[in-house]
Length: 80
Image (cartoon, rainbow, N blue to C red; front, side):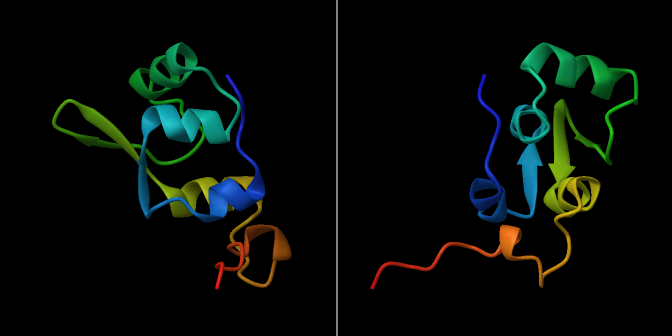
């Protein structure tokens, strides 16, 4: 399992699945689900039916990347 770079994180949608959120945090699938079931995932997790979803804003805040002025979270420039 490979973590995600700040550039990859900056392109995430508003809400991601639990496996993607775990990948952002360097967690494997099993550990991410274990933490979510125990209500110990390090940021907010939404339970929608049988699916766990994680708001990306919570991940960014947890990682200290929630400041729009932070160059690490700026999306890469689009190719022209």
